[in-house]
Image 1 (spheres, rainbow, N blue to C red):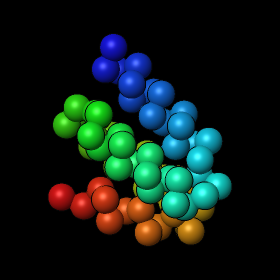
Image 2: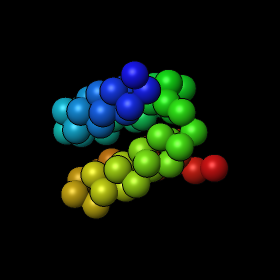
Image 3: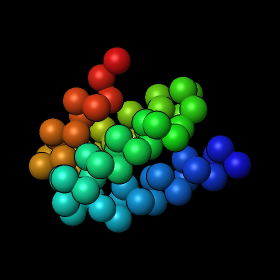
Image 4: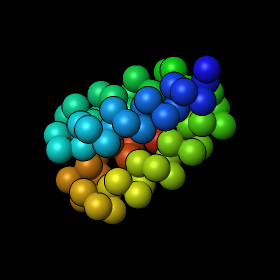
Length: 65
């Protein structure tokens, strides 16, 4: 079940990546819902999206330890 949540989160983030504000909100939601090891995977995924869309760079502050 938890793995399904992670996959769903990746789908949502991909769909809202056009808007940095929405993207940041979804990242914050994901941090509350995901398990610790999934959050580490999420960091990697978000960093790859930021490389493709530099305007999402402001959302990285939520992923800092």
